[in-house]
Length: 363
Ligand code: ZN
Image (cartoon, rainbow, N blue to C red; front, side, top):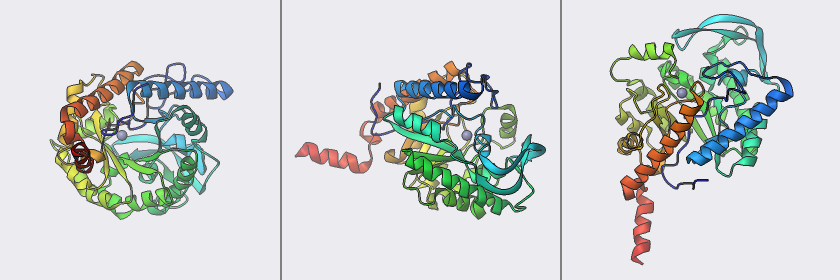
């Protein structure tokens, strides 16, 4: 097992590919290979496998790889009462970037029970590393479901935030160290983020003592996203609008894509005070990053993010990727962070710890 590092701690956005014996490979919405008790066993095995692979690759803050859920939003919705899954309607999502068949909210929302208890407790029992579990963010959920009951986006978002909070508090009790909310809708509805998106996140993290994170991104490497990105121009400055609001929020960490992204790196300066999970691994290509490429992105980000706040991460989830490619990318992430630690020497230390180290050596 590799050691845990004290700076440039590596982590991943969340998901990892499902082994072919668990679900159809290379799909965003894969069919399970088994059902009932056999499926539960397969999910358990896949979770343990990816915990071990992450540890051996040198990932410092690990996840359960989202091996127990079919989709990052619907894995949560399955556990919510008040949604009619028998009736699906076509809806343009992410501001009509693509159409999806979505279920309908038809009554008051309530959790049927625990959502991620089994995999969170399993992962907690089997790793000594910091453990992160992801949940969909309220704005992204609202953007992925039709509503015939609340008839008000903000009310609906706050109702979901309440349920997310319930599950997040329970996950904290299960021993989870980091709870991350995935909000790919945050770069689409910039005004709404400021009007109620962050407020809904605050409701979702209320009372939590563990580390909280929000993952924002321009989406997986699927065709609809690739086409959309082409329309955004040479520089993606959308984040300049929402970063100052996020910097003021009570969320501790922000995860975003950096490598091969058109987000100007200097925008990171607007996230002052936050831990930044800097995307150094591209999930939209099977090409494996070299340690130098990863280290270069870390070095660039370091101009705007102090070392103690910088966590090298993947750009987004790796669920739809090839399993071998994902494994190589985990190793590339760790190798790049190791190179950065070596290359940057004391520049990679927080100013305070570098100072106290100097004092110690003088004594
Ligand atoms: Zn993402």
